[in-house]
Length: 71
Image (cartoon, rainbow, N blue to C red):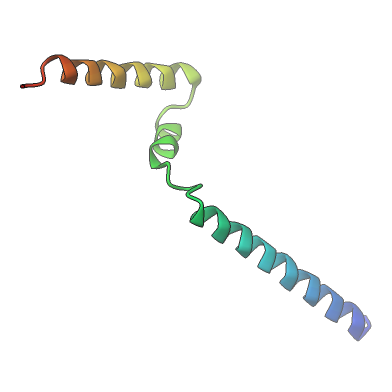
């Protein structure tokens, strides 16, 4: 293999790596990974029905908290 091919492959790989790093840092800065609850719920509940049931349970909890909240 010629030296220019190796240099070209090295240059392209460094460029793509830098592009990926830039995209990751941009996503972290803009809060793309801040929604921990979504990821945790996705791991806990496999299907759509289980996730809907979990949302309904959370709504019931919030309603009970509001109903019995001491004033």
